Image (tube, rainbow, N blue to C red; front, side, top):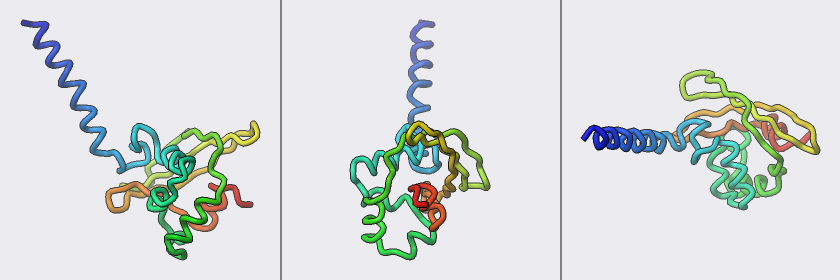
Length: 138
């Protein structure tokens, strides 16, 4: 009987954390389908799903363009580099600064992005400076 109760407790413990994870699936930079926001966006880019990629950006760069123009720009950027999240800091409630490290031609470089929770989805802030930094337009 004791083993049966222990089994049930173990089973419930295994089920409920996964349910809690699903509830935050798009609500912070670390809850994107068991990865982080930028890694997820990079997968969308590699699979050429630019129309699904564009809603995850917000800011002046996006507001100045029509959706079709933003999708066209996203399809032309360099976003295939090796990427690793190295830090995260909560700036305020529902706003984060995330540090990534990318490796290009054997050289490691760190850069930061700002994310915010907008309409129940975590999104990446983009202005012209951030666009150039992220997509290496110098």
